[in-house]
Length: 372
Image (cartoon, rainbow, N blue to C red; front, top):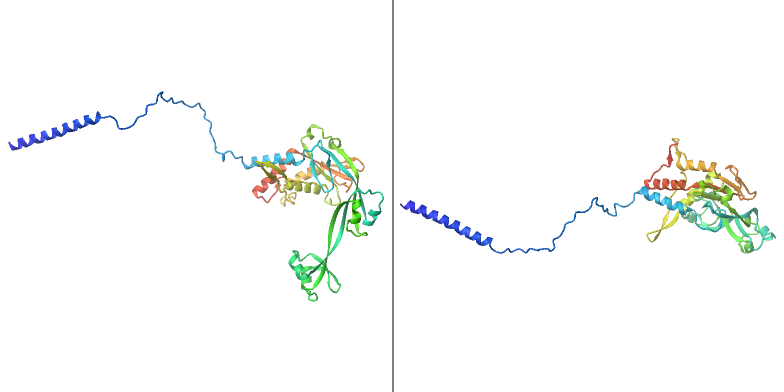
């Protein structure tokens, strides 16, 4: 009896709990929402993009590679290697240059003479304004000591000439003089040096040139100007010439290596000197170094890149004698003070030279050869 009553009580309790839960659920579900909602009127329309999409890359991804940079630099370098000035271009000795095929050049008519300062001053054919270039060797005497020379001179093997306090003139390597016990290293001596001098003056300035009257010298006298049209000299009006530049060089006594050395030196100097370009508001120098031995063949028989170019240019050079007004092509016959060398380069050849040595520089390469 008690067990039946207890069971009924438990069932009633369970039912009561269920009823309470149901009642609570109904109350909670009817309550207003406690979160905020946003109603957009009119509703937003989602538009699908048209394909294909453009991919936007970063600035770093847009940078050109090194080959493209060198190619652009080469084009700019060659484009400005010859000036765009339409005026007459004066071609002096020791002033090589590149010119365009339509250029007008002016060659000062030069007379070469070996003489003395006094003879020049007595020459009645020279007007006061006649330009002169004087080349001579000057003897320079300086007071010093062997001790001081040991510190100042880098080369102790090369012979030097000194005059001791006793008047003895000695020519010997510095290292030998320093070992001599009969010469006081701290005693005064006179060092005698020979120095090459070049002066460009007018005839009226000879008296004030501070040169001994009996000084032997080589003199270049300018007797006027001869104008030449490149197009007339070498028929540069032809179509294949219009994309060319001409390297000009007046032959001097220093051109002992012939045409090969003239062209090589001209390329090295002009490419090293470079040009200046405006980039992003700043001036930047564009140049390239051509090694002095870049024309040498390698022991394994490979021909150098520059050597092939020089060989071709020597065999196709123009040699104009402005004294006889004749054009020649013999690279073995050049006369100092009389001739003008003209070497034709296409724009592509000059670009190739620039890019080749610019690439060698960037690769830090030690070889400048290509297969034969």
